[in-house]
Length: 305
Image (cartoon, rainbow, N blue to C red):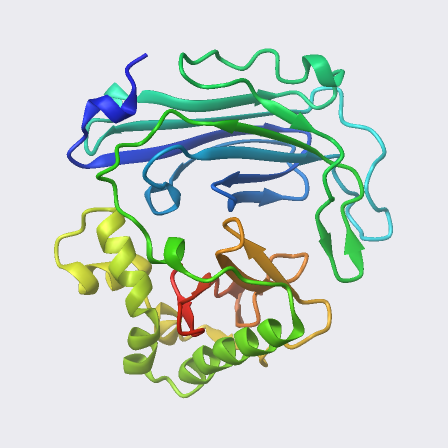
């Protein structure tokens, strides 16, 4: 298998392919959640993940847990479904040449099997270690709700060429789980909320500028920042006449979610809702405005995702 480092892609394109059956999952790349699902019957999906890949060795992680009932009272089942499995595969190819993908990492994980056999069907990759399994790590938890049983499967990747972009969050401060950080980040969310509330499109663009820059870089968009905003569809909900902005969400079941190995944070609840929501009045669909932030060396929260 060709080492991605040696391939010297001009515009590398990274894809994470997922197949999930009969299990709850949190699939992460460099500790950044790509897919979180409390229960999956069966689903297959592909994600473009350029913005979550870093130069050098990347880390693929699958956190699997027995799925939950339809209500919170039913709680988490005690055993994994007999057919529970997760297949997570990280590929790279030259942009526009998806027929020539090269394998960077893979985890094929069957949590219902004995631990020593749970990842035995994972594809061997020369230069990449085996899957590391951990069933003793601290379970995922949220206020008034916890995932009490889980298994974590982790595997490194072949190295990505050193010329790949370095993201601003990589040089940010480490974020601690403190009330001060929660309160200050909530204030940043409120600033975004107020811009939506009064329809201040110019302010929304400014608040999204750093993220737009990085998306433009990650996906080689012509037009720089403006193209990044178009890619993100910045402020699109201002144009949705059928949807209304709800009251700013400050409920106590929110949590400060710190990820990217301590370099990024967001505020969410167990349903993965952020403090800013729109509701479609016709269909009753909830649109949660998802943001990720890092803290720069001046201690400012900067939206980056």
